[in-house]
Length: 100
Image (tube, rainbow, N blue to C red):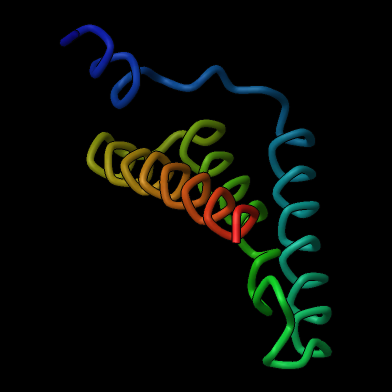
């Protein structure tokens, strides 16, 4: 169990090329901006909520930042905690919104 936590939170990321890391980061940011534009045009009474589409792009963003870039050890642990927490929150939110 301790090895799982060491691997999940402390293992160094396998770095891919800078083009991949920053290119995918740009795609994720474009998704978030596109969703913001779409959310602005929805009415507040939209059935699934105006901000339903922000869950998955932020899940991608936090996981990409936590697992594709090198950070200091403390920053890595904090970012991976945020990434896992958002993953759990996002999956629960999507499940609740789809079963309503």
